[in-house]
Image 1: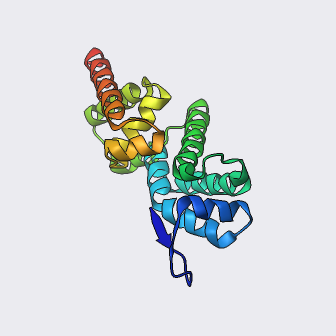
Image 2: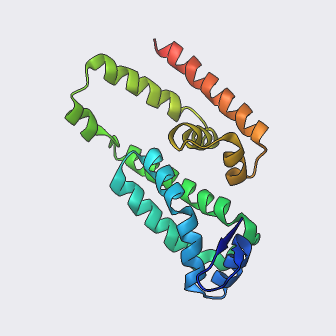
Image 3: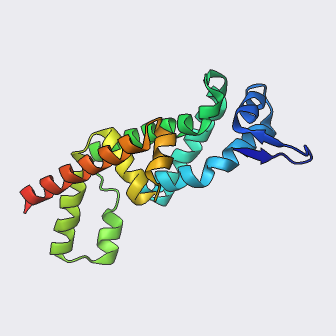
Length: 183
């Protein structure tokens, strides 16, 4: 996939932009960032369920990517590299919040005044989601919350689309089984 750089008259590939960014071209890095920002923000928001937390994690991710871009071995895999960094940061942040016994959406529970039954169902779903492996949570989040197709997830996670579909299907079955046990 190529993009048009301002004034260049030709399309530059992600790989070419990464090469330039590695050489210190901030314009090339800005273009790479522009290409992934919406997707990484959406992913972070759905993983953390909080706008401010998502913005903070995206900022941290961009700083780490900018500082470490020279370490990227396969230039064409820039997007999946960014998502791996983001995914790890989201996972760590969720763990930190869980350790503090903070529910990411206590505020929304209080503000929405959910019924006890709705709250219990939501908690059961969260427990089922938390029982998944981190890879399963990432795949389910990208599919359900991010709206990605299995082909797109496969590209981001370096997997075949069929493997992604199988893993997501098994994750959903695992969640369903856990929720049936809860009832």
